[in-house]
Length: 470
Image 1: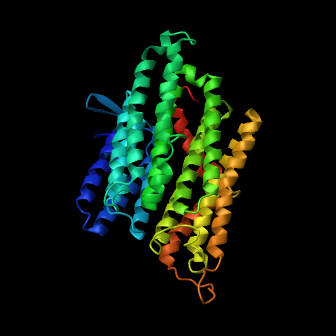
Image 2: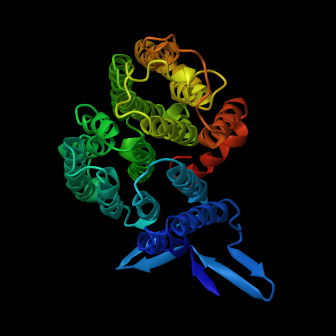
Image 3: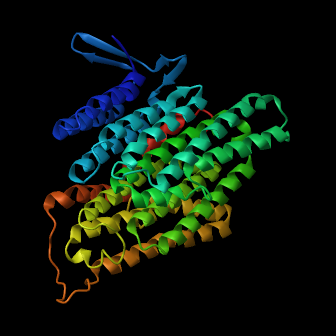
């Protein structure tokens, strides 16, 4: 019996999303089906047979890596499976957290649809059709982002508008690049194509000055939904972008391209750090932290010659854990407060010590505090950028301090007694079921920081799918 791998990691989750979407009134059954689907696809990606055959007693299953669909091919090769496993592992974690937080019911089927579409975007041929699949995934996220609102917020409308504008830029760039192989390197068409392509990805990733939707939806939407979106979309878009470097030699050999990427990435880190440092709202601060992470990803791309592509991929697992932890804890806090700013959360650590610790750990992990998940990769990035451009490296270091500054402000607010007639004493108003899942993730984050070769290195296999980038 033959089974196409795209059926497993693309069509199955989309089909199960339709099933769970019709069972929204039966919450437990919907949760079980969603988790079973996401976790099963994660385990299958991790333990997928290398020879593409699986024997089950008298039955032998042969896996085929390609599936023809609407005149196009979707290919899920074994080299991409570590990233596919990460996508579905992240989906599993976020679906689990939707059960213990007040996440919109529509999030579970939405997360499966988005994961399936973005997985298809990683393997569609011709690869430019990935832009259409990414746009479809973006459209699928709108109901979950605006579920608790009477009408979409300005941030959601801006997010949808800018992401939609990005798609034609990517497609036009692909059309311009069609005959690029026959042109001399100094042809005006080459620079025009690079400009259009860069503008398209800047819109997709929320690069300054197209970034305003990120803190806006982070502030207005549910933290669990926002954290999932801000992880899975940039991860897929950045991996999709590697196709252009793999396909076009003038991109991967141009020092100017790498220099521009480093400069834009450094600008994102500096501006994101400054904006994060002056924030009073935890949800907006998360949005600016996500912008900083986009900056570090662009710096990693700009350091491709120094090994930055490996660092880019290694950022993804550490980022997934920290984003999940931040989104989970904010979701828990939002149950008790309408607004999550430094003033209203004053003294929260005195009532919710474990959840407060978990929130601070998430922020420190994203900032790259030693012994936490991002630390080994951030250290390598700082070292690499200092070697190539010392001035830029100093600015990146200073910008990263902005998130540390906000975290110290958060600690001071969380432990400071709230203003009330009677002195506020330390107590424990949280249940074990509230903070135990996040404690487990904290242990994973620490283990990632201590043993990156075990937890972070395997995803570097994904780079072998791009034959010209190894």
